[in-house]
Length: 186
Image (cartoon, rainbow, N blue to C red; front, side, top):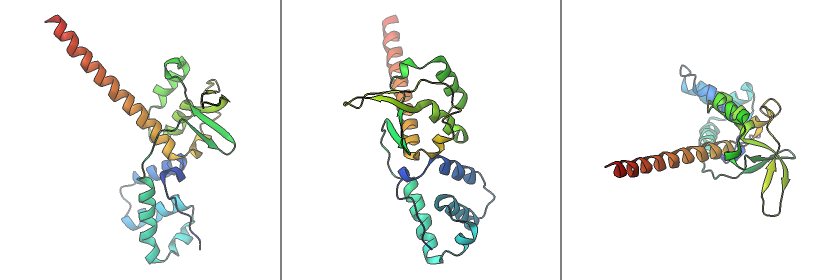
């Protein structure tokens, strides 16, 4: 039996991670059962195939999956699913009311991340030689949400880290501004 394992987080899809996240919520599962299901999720093997894995390979498979989940990420604004290139919203200052409302609606809940990613990443419609690009205008998440389940988890995590860093910077600037204003008042 040949088992294909993810080597990096880039080889894990959002949909696969969502299944794994739901497994993580099952605290009642004994460790062996949890790990069997984990192998099923990340290798797409059937239960009877997982049962036939040699014990000596079992630990290596679990270690490799964990290693792939922990690989570092870098933010890259574009990626491809099949033949379609998707790009991150080029200018967040120009978000529409619909985009903003849907971002608030879906937030960062793991089970709705595919909807959030369908807002943040849309098909690239135009690209120049400097890698500047335009994306399709926003028309809701219905068309691309399920497709986003196929996007690499590395792109999901990198976009969330991007927002986390942005929020942290805004908080720092706000605190600095408050200190300056308090000094002015005194």
